Image 1 (cartoon, rainbow, N blue to C red):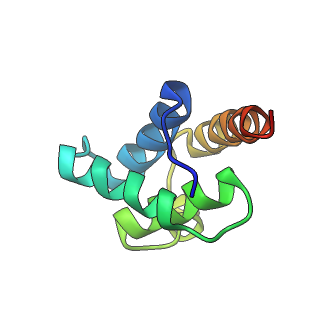
Image 2 (image 1 turned 30 degrees about the vertical axis):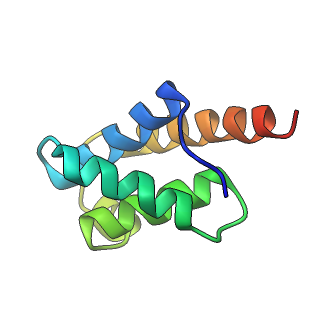
Length: 92
């Protein structure tokens, strides 16, 4: 099982979830995101993070993104970059 600990990757995940929810995450919500990420069976960190975010906001990211005027695309890209770094680091 992979455990999320890379600070920049975590911050990217939290920023997306907060943008989509429209308010700051509680400590319990952050903990739930980490647990969902760690328990996910998805093959990449980006997919595990997306799944964890969707579970925390209780809807698909794309559904919310389709009517959002915020910079969700940039945040998703940032998360994917951090996820790729995370995956590469874990392969060492």
